[in-house]
Image (cartoon, rainbow, N blue to C red; front, side, top):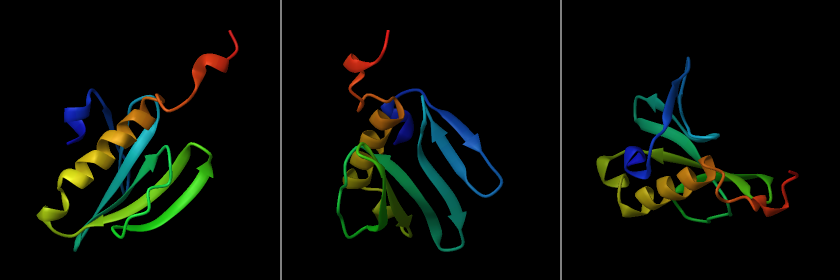
Length: 100
């Protein structure tokens, strides 16, 4: 799903795997019962599958998830991956006001 979005860098760490473009947008860790991780999305996306949502700035919201069965990796999950990839590319920012 991630590779379908475009080129990414996979950053393996001690206890998790981060997925990065211009910034990290998705993190997963392997657990005995499946995967646990989070996306960074540009807006709050309430959904029963998110365990917790944390807001860091108006356009950066961390959405925690758990994948416990293969069927969790459905079209909805793929949509979140795609949205998070856009945040990773920082396309969600209004760069027209950036200093030159």
